Image (tube, rainbow over the protein chains, first blue to last red):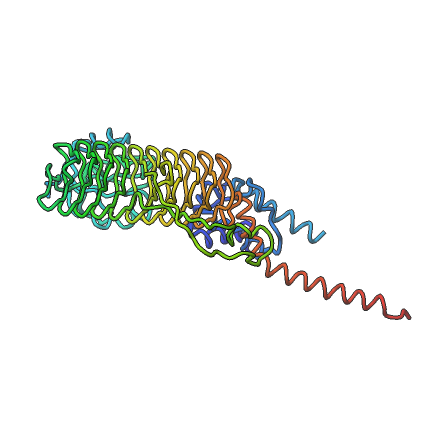
Length: 82
Length: 371
């Protein structure tokens, strides 16, 4: 069964056109040179996948790592099931 | 056509401020796409893994490659490694420009006013018109079918490509490049009505309160002043000022099909991409970047170093150093949040409908008599 990390990396790869092997938990979207509109599509696809809303008007959203994005997803999923 | 220039790899490495690997004595004479590299003296440009995959197995002995990019072991006898490929191209490609030098002098078909002053080494092409009291500086190259009106002044080393038009009093600094059909110094879009017009009375509501009856023309008496090392792309137009000049300052680069209205002042080292439209009397600071198809409303100020994302509509001033996007343009992170908000609407509507149904169910169960 795919983990949250697998799904997030799959979404980033699909929306940005990057190869999966170039994306790791330690990558930031800025390091990956994700374009502005791809960033929006990635956030939207993650929200749809996990049925959550990400805090996107924080400029740090783009500079955080994939790991921090996964942590936020896990936090929201845990909060919903609590 | 002049013969191809040849350069040793060690000289290129030094010129590009790159790092030489291997044999610096190899000579190259043609930068090219990897898939097009056939000759041993070709210089393929390898800036990505995709580019490496397109490389043929034979041919060139040397390449220009991105620092750190993995290449097939032993494939090249010499390499120049660079950290910033586009900057390297800006240094590399001028070395390989091939064009016939324009002969100095005035083509017999050119019409040059007797009161114009043309530098002895300037080149004036066929069917060029030059007006009275206009001064053409040393080393200028004016290609065919260019029209330069009266009282213009061109600094040294300007290059005007075919079809460029300069209105009266236009002034160019040194080394200005105007591409095909640039138009500098047409009259501004400037009109007035005797009574307050429809736009002036639009302060409240959505109904026109007055009508524009007679629209009177405000002629343009000012000129256009272009600073040193400005480059203006094909088909772009910059209107002359009403009283003072419309100004573009030193080092600014303007793409094709850009419109800059009358009385605008554009600062130094700005980058203005294709299809930008700037309405009259705007003040654009230094080192501002306007993405493609940006529109700027009249009388606005965009501060130094600001960046406006492509296709944005700027309707209010932009503070120095801001990155803005959207229509109307807002701070970039706010714009991205707006986009995401739009994308979320469908799911949010479904969630609200679900909540409404649950609430209605709760209301019904509340009204139901208890057993």
